[in-house]
Image 1 (cartoon, rainbow, N blue to C red):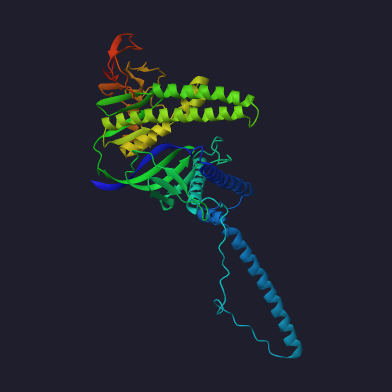
Image 2 (spheres, rainbow, N blue to C red):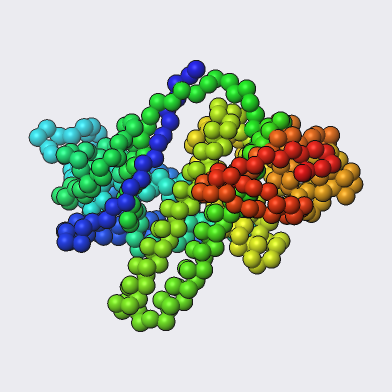
Length: 478
């Protein structure tokens, strides 16, 4: 066993009290200042790209945020003017010495500061007067990482026009604090800002316990996210290798050579569809109202509440789904299919919306957070390729090979091909699917429900946890 540092995320709802106007003003001012910092970086980066100049790094962005960049330019200009004036004066002395026949003596170079002289360095005010220096550095770090990631994607895909540098201007933005700016006192979370600005005080709800040292605090509109660092024991070797295929109707298809677990994703799909319909309805109503009117503000508040509620529901379902996978295959080495959103360009409008709105990246991040060692592999055409003869067939929920007659659930076929890609780097023929396949819903419902199977239309009873077992072979799946 080896010790490693792991991170745990704690989130709770928070908004300033309506009666506390000072906290509301400070909270709004900090969010505006954070958005202004991001917007100015976006504008400056666009000018740098347009002029073909050298891209600034983190150190140069930090100098720009503290105002040191302009101060250094002013100092360099003053030194240049002083050198030019000194050269002109020495030239005149040479002319006078030559005309009078005297010897010209070169001046000695003075090093160091004269005795009794004061330093010319002064405390320069920051470009952002309310944000702390650590908060500005976190924004700069996020921006530079986004630019670096976009540059690497463009290098890998030179002709893809969908890959764009950060260009959206933000009026409001979340505020980030490092552990150096965080202090806990009398059940309150004190977040220090710039010098002369009062700290932001957040009451910690009852029952919230921090599992380790606080690394970062992110204050959003309506919620607070706290990242803690805790020690974690991770086994040095992973004896079990598991492949996971992430989808829409089936959220996770996880399994090994002998068993597989399919987690239904219809709960998440229903939440996303409800969110899209409500968002379109509210947005159309907002456009018809007068700008900055009371009715428009109420509709905007309703829109944000709806989006926040749907986000919490999706996060809850994803947490329960990933926990079932982590409990089924603990301490395993995971091969997971990388989200392939190019498939949305080749299907209809409704299917394209389902694929593009799927929360596959969030699901992958939660799996990596709970299981540990995960490796993303290319999953292109993994659900179409037969594991027996490598023939591609377009099927619905049940995969049927027209060449060899192989029949199995399509998600299990994709999982088997991803497992082959993770082990050998490519899909190999002559492989069988797991014999035991277990279908699970992430949310448990009370009572017994009758479900109709799509392929055989036979009724069977599903217990309260909706877990059923299937026996899959090379020719039948009953």
